[in-house]
Length: 487
Image 1: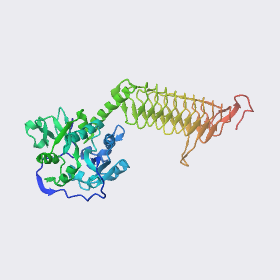
Image 2 (image 1 turned 45 degrees about the vertical axis):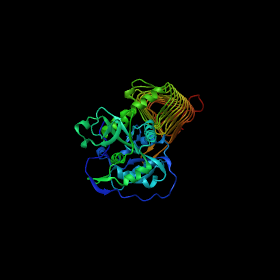
Image 3 (image 1 turned 90 degrees about the vertical axis):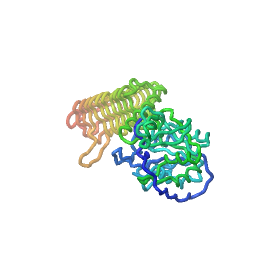
Image 4 (image 1 turned 30 degrees about the vertical axis):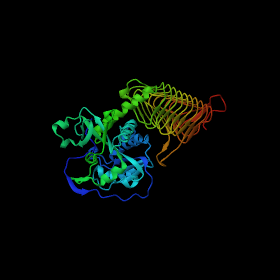
């Protein structure tokens, strides 16, 4: 375990000030079961980044996304994300996923929760509070926390964790098994510091108790209001407080710096690897394979070492991906091989072979049975069924028919430096392009045509034509149709 969240409490002395009451709710409504408040206003200074902390990536999604996903299984009637630092970016990332409240001043966790009162008071019987930088929380754990508060009729239930190294965390204090307080590490005696049950900062409150108590929170010497002070308030009133230990202590991990972000990545990757293997995917070396959360891999596919599957990649059955391949937003059919290559924003139909050391990118589609050799690149092009494109070739902005043979070193010259525009090349079925052919777009090579080695094709080649030279000229027809000569 690592250090607690940036919004962790400090042991400074209370002052006489209290949190000012919020504006009243805009409308009355009968309380529903559950509302949620996600605290995402912190600056995250230890990340040393201009990006809001909750928008840093983990397995292809922002940290905040994981928290909202875990919440979604509880189906809260309303979810409010409290924003502050980088508010516009966080709001844009949220879209319609949740409401938001703005914390103009960073005055602590207690103050942050009060910003959501106008949206939740009178509408929810209980309120779940959690941090936007806690991406490893599991839905079952949140269900257990809410259920415990209900079962015991508690003023609040808090999520705890029993850890080997509690350094940096507040300790949960118990007497005869009953929670009697949460003590910050700096305030703890040596005996209390030896306690291994820590406070994660995730709570479920009875709403009718929460809102009045928030307004009575003491203001600490640093000018902030702390949510942990509600534990002491409930105990002093004789109200029940329960602590629910997380089944996996890693769920209590908050992300404050790049080290903790890497630790969270390791944890989420372990979950994703196990998930894929249990669904019928073979990972030859699981620890060397990395998955984004939106990746789908069908059973009986094998992922070889050093492979990254990113974005919304979809891979069909009976494929072999890797070793050392990277697929991003790729759609891959069945029985495909991607050997030490990159496929990004592109589609492979069934029975396609790519690599080694090839690159299929932006808008490319390889139809059934296409074979790409080593050091081949395809961009914004369609290659027809069973076409072979061999080594050291580039096809960009091209429409290639079926059963075409693309010789080594073939290039489409698709960009005009003067006009700054790209043009397309079309190649008909069964054409054969000789090694080092250059196709200067826009140009059309007809069905069954041939180009000679080193040909520079600047004008259309008719069907069955044989074009050679610089610039290429048609010297004959493959079937003897018509006289040889220039076009």
